[in-house]
Length: 115
Length: 221
Image 1 (tube, rainbow over the protein chains, first blue to last red):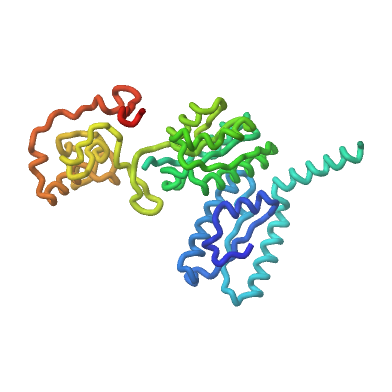
Image 2 (cartoon, rainbow over the protein chains, first blue to last red):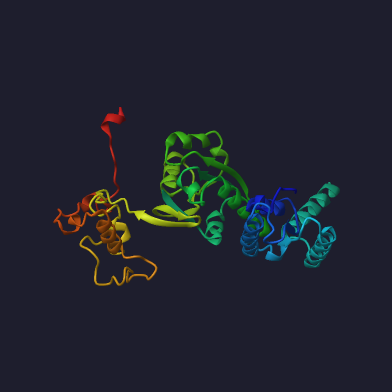
């Protein structure tokens, strides 16, 4: 999802990503102190902190949502963050919701085959 | 405005346990301003509940609506066409909105927030009580500072013995309401209000007489 600033990323967007099947969500913003809109990335950071705590309460795990900061010129660092985080999420395994959903669709598939 | 705070998620989930198809209704009035029951909060809470329920293997369908106000029948009417398709309504309006919804529709109406007080926004994220709706306002005598609300003991005759250096004994974070009143009366050159004898406050207009009602006969016809 592309937004002009992480300050535009509200809490609902983060949760909707999990509803839509994400196993992990990265919020990638500019370096702290470098926000073109002054405090956008700091606001995003506060929201990520709040929502990560909520993910723990819900049972998905706070590690599934993380804020990353880099400058627009650091393409390789972006790739590194993505690779490292996707590996970390893969190690934890899919989101419990996605496990339940795939089990459910597998059992529906079996029922169809039996019919 | 009326201020509220969200209920803990565990409490909401336990309330919603018997249901798998609900309406989550917000209000564009006071609870939108205190960031607990407006459109954004409806979206966020609906998403949170859906995720929590699906994680438990008990998915729930939630219709998200935000009404202009839940304390006016006309706006509540907006839910009439679809409310019969749902098992319950979780309302994140104030207690008045929740009750008025319940008066209008014959299905369980659940409170999604705790209604706390009538107050003001002191700064972003900080709200404070200013009025207890006692029904007999004396602000003209007290420099515009309410002794009922700002004094922890709601006393009417100046600072009590527990006031020290402008701080209330109940909590060091509470300013002494009467110190505030006296400072303000001095500034306004109205200290005569403090020394003048006044009739006793008419508490019968407060909560003691049961639920209150205002009838404006000129407007009822």
